[in-house]
Amino acid sequence: MNLTYMVNTNYTNVKEVLKNHFKVSDRLLTRLKKNSAISLNGKSCNIYDPISMNDIIKIDFNYDEDNSNIVSTKMDLDIIYEDDGLLIVNKPPFLAVHPSMLHYSDSLSNGVRFYFDSIGLKKKIRPVNRLDKNTSGIVIFAKNEYIQESLIRQMENGVFTKEYLAIVVGDMSSLKKRNN
Image 1 (tube, rainbow, N blue to C red):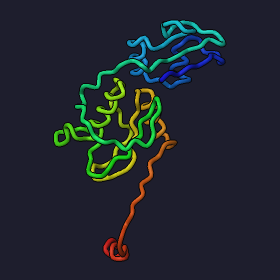
Image 2 (image 1 turned 30 degrees about the vertical axis):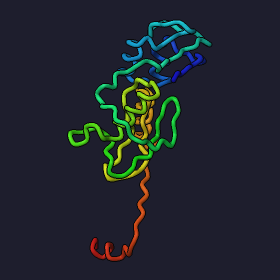
Image 3 (image 1 turned 90 degrees about the vertical axis):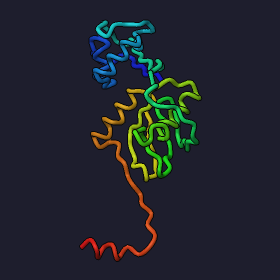
């Protein structure tokens, strides 16, 4: 995934565009510099390089990341959407999202790691939202840190919200009486 910006505002250097336009965190900025993932007019650049109107700044998120902290486990994934930045999976009930002592190799993240390996994507496993083990529903995985940060920021600002739907069978009137 790449992000491109043509300078059309009075920014003075590349870093200002990354911080103000793209809202890149300091941690991600450090990672981008380490991976030489920032370019100015098609050439690798320093974040303090001056910029002018119509300059093109590009961020390339296609660098490899270490994902060896998650064991790769083959499982059937119900992928409902995928693009360069997101993988959205319908999680069945009774499956943990994250590996743990009890679910070291049988979590949804283990299956996503196997899937990433199968398509040659060397990226960390980044679930954006969580669901309890017994709950079914949609889990969003960010394919890079920028997408993860953007979605988390949206959740914090109330732009991106979660809704739950429960299906109940039976007479609910007895529950109401017990709770009063």
